[in-house]
Every structure is written in structure tokens, then in C-alpha cells.
Image 1 (cartoon, rainbow, N blue to C red):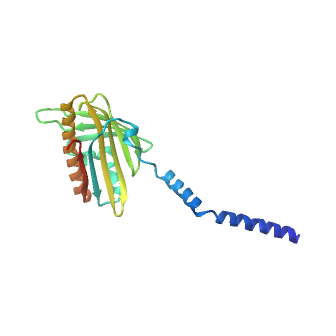
Image 2 (cartoon, rainbow, N blue to C red):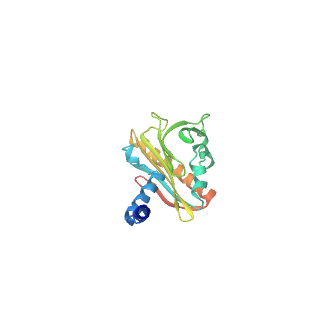
Amino acid sequence: MKTTRFGRLGLLFFVLISVNCKPKNETQSEESKLVMNVIPEMPKAQNFVDSPLRNRIKLNLKAPVSEVWNVVGRPERMPEYSMGLNKVEADYSEQKCTGFTCYFHPMEGQNIGLEHKEQVIWYEENIGYISQSQEPNNFGYTDSLALVSVSVTEDSTIFTWDIHYNAGDEPTLHLNIDSYAMALDDIANNLIQLFDGKILENFVYGK
């Protein structure tokens, strides 16, 4: 009986030593895999479109990611920080946005504003979303993609809005580049006024 007990205790000790003496690099590898599984990787624009980056605004906002996302991650709230919009209607499925429709204020001399539809093809809470414009559309661009993202940096949030698209002709392309530049300037100023912060990058294609 003594030999049997010793054998069982020895086996238990061997198992405990085997579990707790796992190589450090192996443990770190498993932890890294766990983190990668918890935080989805941000897709790249090139996975969806061939069009180049035409406009980008990048801001450092003095607020937690969750607060910033509660505004910029909800397309229906766009009119709060984009003055050209009258309203935005968004569709959700299982708490993820699947698409939205923008209703713009009428331009001078017009009674009805433009309507624009976007399909959301990727959406992750507190990380970002990717949308593509319905074609054809009132703005004349094709192969379009918008990527809105937020990320943590110390005590603030990095907010980025990238826009890719092509157009049927050069005048239409340049018109859209200039229009987006003005729209993103407006968005940047309003978000900075809302959260405090600064502009890190304001990219305009060809300028």
C-alpha cells in the first residue's frame, strides 16, 4: 500500500511540474494567440478595392475609445458632426451596422437634397467599420470604400477616416477630391470641438 501511495503522489508531482514548467516563449505565443483572437484584425482596403486612397483625416481626440465610438461608430449620428447632412438612417443586425442611407441638405437653389446609400461590409465595436457606396450613385464615383477606425493611445483616441474611390472622368474625380476634403475638414473641426484634440494628418490626393 505504501508503494502505491508513493507512486500516485509521484505521478501527481510530475504532472504539476510538467504544466508549470512550460517554456516561456511557448506561453507568450499562446497569450499572443489569445489576444489576436480577442481583438479582430483591421481589414485592409486593398482586400476589397483597387482604387487608391483619395482623402484621409486622422485625429487625436482627448476621450476614451468607447466615447468616441459611440458617436463615430453610429452612422445615424453623422449629422451631429457633419454639417452637410440632414439625417442618416442606419440598419443593424445583431448590434452590427449593415448599411446606412445619407440624406444631404439641399444645395442652394434646390428643394431636395441628394440621397446616398452605403453598404457596411465589416463592422467591429470600438474598432471600426468599412462601407462601400451603392453604384451607380449621385456623386459619380466607383470602386469606393470608406474605412472609419478608432484605436487607443495613452489617454486619448486616434480616429481615422480613409476614403478610396475612382471616377469616370478627371473633372468628376477632382470635384469629389475637393468635396471630400471640405467635408473631412468640417468633420475634423466638429469632432475636435466635441472631444478636444488635434489633427494629425489631413491627406488630399494630388496635393
